[in-house]
Image 1 (cartoon, rainbow, N blue to C red):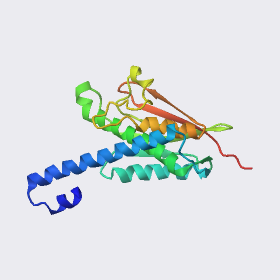
Image 2: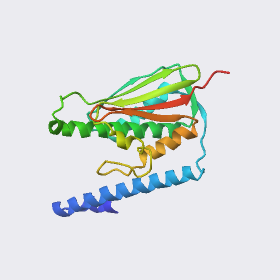
Image 3: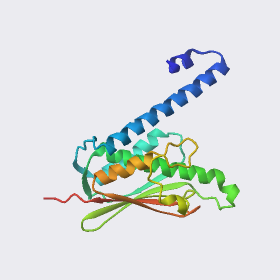
Image 4: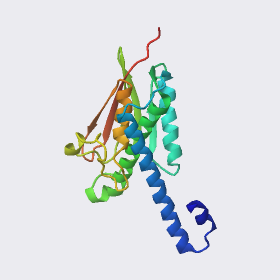
Length: 210
């Protein structure tokens, strides 16, 4: 109904107020959806549909989703994967986990870009990269950014619900991401330094050919 009102409103001032209402309603919907997902995971009510997945295909799905979510973003995303690798997992949930991390990385890059003058840092091109390494049993996905980094005192709490430093953040994305990875018998860790970027490392079992 707010969308309809906004489309039919001729007064510029009222249209601006309606646009703000639409934005806040969208944020509320996203928050409720995230809370529901987190509650379902904590209650063990999420059923995973596990299938062999191409890692290369999964990463590109997540990158496409990130670009579609923010079509006006100028943040570059580079993917360096191993097409032959595969894992067993739920495509929907793993894509969501990767998308959460890509969004966080994009936010970190934009935050640094807007604060470079304040910290007298050299300018450089905003960039996010996804890379993959593997050993005999595990694959390691690294999502890195050259953003503002995470302070050491915040790193141990970063995966807890409602922990966020974003003005419009909910603090649920990383909590949900960790639960998704753990449900796939994997782990998520990070390396970060203030004003030196962040790397999230996902470790997951490799799907072996029978």
